[in-house]
Length: 216
Image (spheres, rainbow, N blue to C red):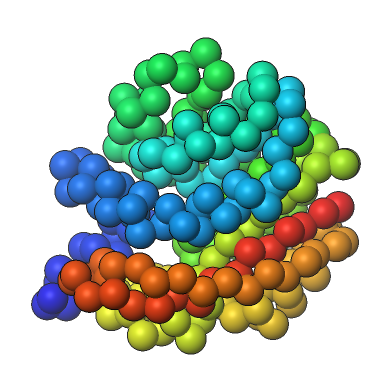
C-alpha cells in the first residue's frame, strides 16, 4: 500500500467514517474478535450487571457478550458516528438491552460509579491524555467493579506500516507505568498470542497482546 493509503487506513482505524469506515469496521471486528472475546471472558460477567464498552466499533460481538449472563445491560460508546449507526443496525434485536452513544473521546458522559464492568480493546493508542482518561474510567466504575484494557504489544505494532500515523504504542512496562499514574490501585497482566489476517493483505501474522485486569 502507498503512504497515502496507509494514512487513510490509520485514520479510519482511529475513527471510521462513511462507506470506507463501514468496511474498516467489518475488518476490525474480524481481526479483533479474538482479543474482544478474551476481554469479555476476563470480565467474569454476572447476572444483572451493567457493562460499558469504550470504542465498540460495529459491535458484532454483542450477542456473545449478552449470552454470558442473565438480565445484562450494555452501553457502548464511540467517537465514530458511522460506527454508532452500524452497531445499532447490526444489533436491532438487542435494542432493549443495549445503547450506543456518541462522544468526543475525552469525558465519559455518565454519573459516578455507574458500571459493574468496563472494557476496551485496541483503543488506548488513540487516547489524547491517557492518565486523565483512565481517571474518567475510574470515576464511572463501581468500587467493586472490574476494568479490562486490552492492547497489542509495541514490538508487534511497530512492524505494521500504518502505526506510524498517530498511534501511541505501549509495552507492558510502559502501560504499567501509565496506570500507576492514575487512581487505579491493582492490576493483573495476562499475555496472549494469536494468529490473525493482516489488515493490509491476506497473509497470516502472529500478534502478541496483553489483557490487563484493573481494579480500584
